[in-house]
Image 1 (cartoon, rainbow, N blue to C red):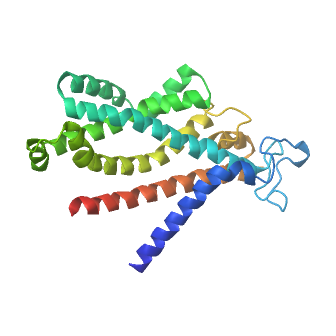
Image 2 (image 1 turned 90 degrees about the horizontal axis):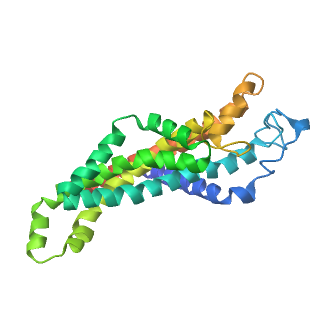
Image 3 (image 1 turned 30 degrees about the vertical axis):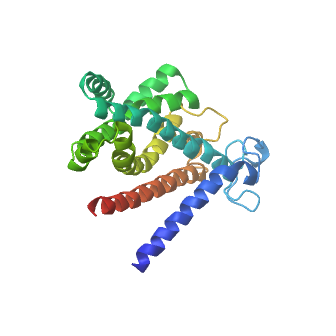
Length: 270
């Protein structure tokens, strides 16, 4: 039990540090992440540049910190947009049923018929490169899983006896929804969204790596991987550092999702 408690504490502290870095990045970067210095290009790790410099002499640590806002911050914003779209559609579909349910689910099925990454690439290509278009493309393909999850939760819960008893006692649909069904929805959604943040981060980095996301000189981790590709043998840290940053954040998001899933599994079993 002590080990579990220590692990949970370390995970919480790690998340707090990541969130703090996300908001404080513009104020703690040791150098201007966009300032080129050709005289110091491809420098290894040293006292002035703790993580070295890139092919244009820009400080890599500053670009990693600034890039966290693009990679992690935008992935969080995308998840909020996805929830705002997916949850209401799932609730309406599950509560109303009938023609509304069939329309929403056929639209959802159409989006889910293809791998979300492929659809995101196609949409990003059609809309053009840029972070705003990237956000639209990813949000367009990610809301469907939340709509389906919420719909199935609503349909499952509203058929249970305690919901029927509440309705017989005169509880309104709004009260039944807020008091009895919503707590079940929020647990499932929080678990899925926490696990999905890591997937969205990888999707953003992947699309930026192939030139459909952040554009130079924006310090986004996927774009930084692409910039360092040509110098991998000469300066491998240009790819290793942003690659490790992506892996670390995705790992933390997955660990948080696993913890939340265990918590809500325990609650659901009580």
